[in-house]
Length: 403
Image (tube, rainbow, N blue to C red):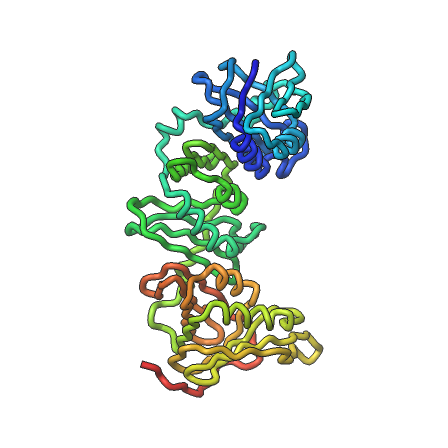
């Protein structure tokens, strides 16, 4: 048996497999890659971990045996192949337990393991076939757009799940708008985009989101998402990703979304570079228990950001101003001093397209932040975040309204 690969294609697909292989387990079967063909002679690479699998099509590879099926050590194969410079590589089976890999003047011997134990793994044996995927329906989404929305909200999805924290994102399409939302106990991130279809909500765990973000979608740039009781399946024309489903009850985030028009203060920041530079400058001065930055209004055109040292003492919490930055802004309404977690604010600001507008009701209610041309009535990219406790609360000093 002989398999001929196009080197760049093999390098790319082996690199992708690294996202799954041995992610949580170092057992022999989980550190191996299965190389096999289907009845049509199309070659595939397949890797697995305890809760996920990734199967990758190699349409430009050829074989003289349509029953090709071998299992080799992934790390060594990948390390060797990534250094190849010749345009092709040939893998030839030499008996039942050894294969020889050739490319240009390079030659390497690889040990082969029995494939039956790998294929019998529960996570592998339940991988749906192309026919099963075709009849199961699922939701078809544009992969580049979905990946972009996931990237925008991923920082709001916590790594660990607890009683009040959901380590999953919510995805649904309603009124021809695709929404991807993440939530921890202090913030909600939402990304919204137009779509031609509608479907009910389902959740995707953070690990699956990260794996999904590594798919390239092939020529069609579409992904079919199938949400079943036992697993999530993500299928493109060249990739098949499965993840052991952990069904999650996403918190009723709508209850804390501020009602449009309920704000008393509106702050619009137009210059992204200036805002990010200010946050990065004062970030090292956010010391102590909390990493907060206080927002206070100086005038209708000037905003002050203050980093404080926060110390818990016997007499109470003590705030000491350590650094501040002043920024140009368009400000209307009544001045309210509020404080936001800088580690929650920065990821949003880095992803956002400016101008960014903050809608504030009080120093103790959620701050509604909009970017990418969105508004409370028509959000596009949104962060709703609870303010932190601050030394002083609401200022009753009104500022001029800019028409």
